[in-house]
Length: 114
Length: 119
Image 1 (tube, rainbow over the protein chains, first blue to last red):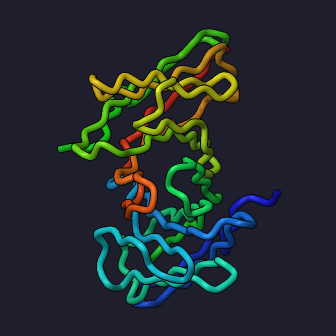
Image 2: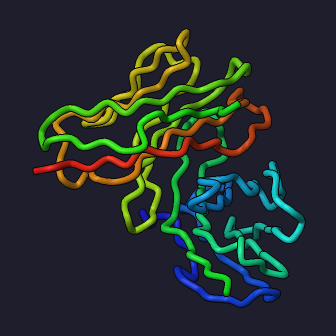
């Protein structure tokens, strides 16, 4: 079956702009979580959505937001972009049952802020 | 304090040798899950193996096995018969609060180990 799909794969924005990234989970998976990866901070948890509700949130400012649709697809938005937001943004999907251990990532969206 | 510690920033290994990647973790939660991911230069995080804190046996997936030593809070990844395609970054991660029906935070990742397999 198809894996986790993230779009766009690459994008360049300037400071102050906003960006929306999209994630389509594996069919049947109801949980989508987002991570930011930078050389300095490594991989950090942004938030998780399950059945259209934010279930958990990491320690990021309010400029980072997300949502999940009824088909489990998710979007994340970053407003008022800063240079430090340049990163690889990874989306992961799982069935939603934390006991299964299934958590699969997409290829990521690489954001460059100039 | 670091929740996930990977002490080997980089490793060089000869092809066909076995590899052990170290991971120690820190948690007071009795219910947690441990994950290993491989990240090649393309950026995709590839799931390798999972171990639940209540699992009695060490997890295995093909050439990958997880040496789970609960008392030592250690979850080392063992790759048997390494191949050139195993060259990548390897991340150990933990998710706390794995109890059924309970809330759980996202994954906490280690800094990673850059593994290079030499022919």
